[in-house]
Image (cartoon, rainbow, N blue to C red):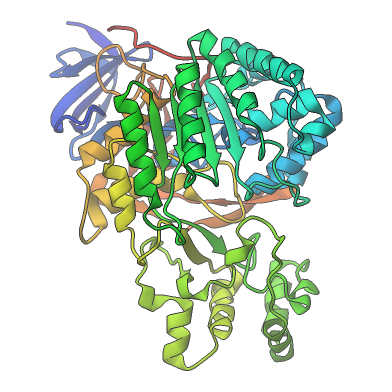
Length: 574
């Protein structure tokens, strides 16, 4: 009788294929699944999974761990939510290739676009690389808990080749494009999973300057895409403000067609054009029917921000009276904000800075601002908003928001959904998740550390959409497949996301009845004491990466079996 390294006994297996769940055992050897079904051999370690779900590890294809991966072996909080593979370098921002003279530029861009403290990046990044292959070589020397893939960011490439002209968004010359294309090909051949770009005005450096790629021309994008296509590997990730324009969708299709590579783009429902997302997804589906590979990355819930006195944003941040005390420690600031004269001055002097940080244009959206709570409610009743509460109490909305922010000694979090929220519910998110062109993305793990904590999207998929939503729930088999097999295949990682012989032994054992998100909390554990939001979840009993347990009942085991991924992967056994 065979002896295995690990046997998982009696769990309810949802294998990632979309097939119906089954009760089965799994055997693991040398980091791979070797048997699924009735495993007769014993294991050196046996895990009792009776009463639990057994799923593939989740694959998160839209993170920004580009900074954290350089100093932290634990890619938390992703690893707290069943994620066993993360892909970074999205939205065209990152730290390679880079000249020494451009370190500050790339930090300022990442700080502005992704709300990662510049002080943490300055202290935490060792800059032991210049080229993208050297960056991968550096990452490969570091131990980590989960597998990590990197993509080549367009802004870094543009600045590297064009210098100040690239920062100023000048048109690229044919020589510039040739150099960028060569860098892209070199990066893909060295192991980059893809190439990413951004054409959104919302992406700005911390100084307010637009992202270098905002006006990148079709000749530039196509030149880079063709070079990637020659490698026969890699994917393209795209974010744009202009998806409602036919010429932008035409360009996206040309990039996919002329490169021959899969392309994904960020898609959400915008209040001003609440039906446009359907047009976009349907066009992507039709393009795929013609032989292109086009996917939409969609969110598991509304896209929104959290505001609080200890966060990047709050409704009173631009009030001169608040600015006067903004640098005080939180406890002292709470004492000052409770002073009636200070309170009156802060509220009377409220205003919005139109050139403020990302998300600041929503800080007075009192009609869609809610207490987040613990358990956090990401589909709140519109009747519970700040504005609706103020109307019932015959008060000004700012007065209500002010009081709510002072709850829990100033640590309260207010939640403002603004995308995927037209109609005041998440019905549109369900439609997106059920669309054949859509896959889960946009968690932004490692980024927006003072405004969001959407890294918990995988848990939202299971808990809210699979169990708790009062209506419109989605079968767990589909949810698991979307967050594991579909996302893995979207970036060429065919060796994971499926519980079958020959596939990587990346998996979760989940007490589904106990699965529960906690409210995000502020911690100051980044380099230089930088602040970030973290969010825990109950119910993840065991998470394994390459057959080794990295999380047990919500606590890290200390094991670091994760690897840097270089290029596409195939299962060991066809």
